[in-house]
Length: 425
Ligand code: C2O
Ligand code: CU
Ligand code: CU
Image (cartoon, rainbow, N blue to C red; front, side, top):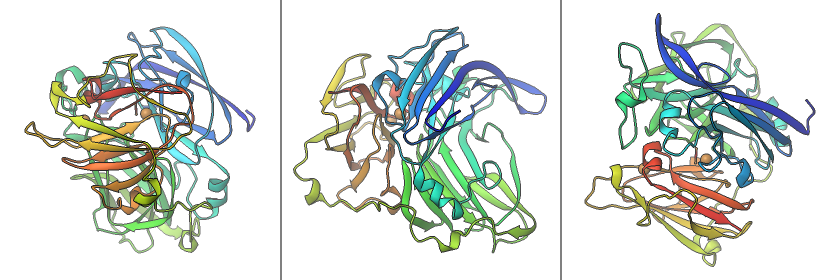
């Protein structure tokens, strides 16, 4: 395959997965039993993806985080019927980032994701090429994808969405990492890069190491942060991503655990003496074009729009309305900047955090409740958690025309109406 063009074939199919030894659970996967392959793209590349549906139900193929024409976006209008296939085409506009793909099938996407349909998309560009001497980048060796999900098991080992469904987002009391319950990793590399994706239906995950060691966040949803940001814990809402780097030099000889909420999710053991795989210590910046802090006065004249997330359970709504397939409730101009204020309405109905997401954009967060956003939210984002009673201002722009959507990425909220189509002209 040439550098300029790439062709992928992604087939959604029924499968079987042994989460517990000897117990086969029905599952769904892309090109396999559960989850999917990592799709590798480069900025500027012309992409064709053959999306094939071998399921007994309709499917759509959404490339979460990518800016692409509405025809290729894979929203609920772009159904691929059972036992058929269709090609989508787009050019990669995104910079280097970790994105993902999943179904967006109207009413079916919560079940399809819960049963296993999710895959990663890695985008590279000239900047990420140049960062290779500083950042671990050997897939599966020192650059590790971690798709994190929570699941309930019924009948001693079976994932069955229908039995555990919850209208406020289906959760679980077990943690899956890359589709597996127990994950151990042996390494002799000093620096590890973990690409974290929260692919749960609704759950917020808090990541930390059991010895409270510091790690560095290097990227958010849509690309690299300005500098590696030292931190001891990190929270990702549904659909959010973060890339982190951990230095194993000073860790003890006993295994290190990546904790996700209360779970010992990943056991990392050092084998032998550590190899200096990259010179992460000498990295000053991760971007050539440093991202500035945007102050309120700089965006004061831009068109302003409110997005009010209301209610829980079947009462969920956006600005007093429920989603209707094909009906555009908002109109925007291509390549024009807008300020959106996303509000999690505090009312007498029980409030929940809502993970807000918009298509065809990588936005910047301007403010949370009138204050500067958290430092690790100052890069490009496509999803953010709006907590109870919060208002978050973002700066958005859409590079494509057509019918897109923004919504709560609590997938059950999404399908019960906390989703809005907008038209970009
Ligand atoms: Cu991750 Cu509208 O989707
Ligand atoms: Cu999306
Ligand atoms: Cu929600």
